Length: 253
Image (cartoon, rainbow, N blue to C red; front, side, top):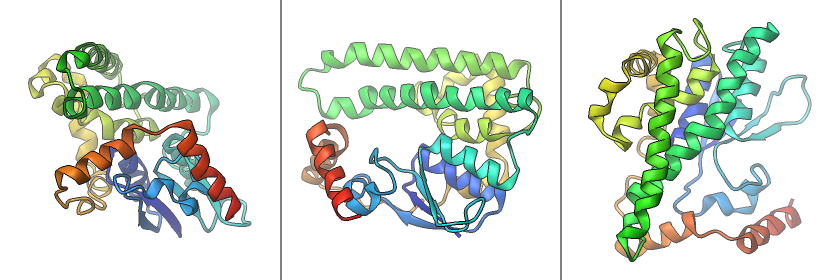
């Protein structure tokens, strides 16, 4: 059994989709990121960067004690190794996949997160909307560029790393499927190969199931005061706050 520390976000969906694709048994442990669960000592012992998703595999490869892993890229690589699925064994093919996995972790996810922050959350935080203009232009523009990178790759390949469906697709799809919502739904006409891939991957039964895990979590409408507290929690972390929470986790381990 694998425990999945999870909240229904693109990064969380990566793991539940992979688990569904691999047919592995898992148990969801909600991590309410708006309520501060990610700073609880018991979670920080598993994920020291206070970010979900994370997993604990109670039957790890090679046996031994339960294995905790954080960072979605590392989790998908581990599950691929454990099951022998969605990651080729041959070095040349393997690294064709892994370069796109790392591309997503370093590019698509962070850039879309920043674009969403400035375009959507920022308007509720900034006193002067003009303060947001550069951030919106910078990061939405970068998402547009990255969409072009994927579209060009997919013009010559069925999937991101070639002709086979791999963890490169699993890790990228949860963010890529939201690009139209972030930029403009009409933008898909500019990226037909990307749209073809988004639709094809989204039609897979395991993707559909994994994408909707925990869809009822976090549905309660927050008061204005609660929403402000949530924003402060998510966006105003400091070294001192994180260090204090981490020290508490270590002390109680």
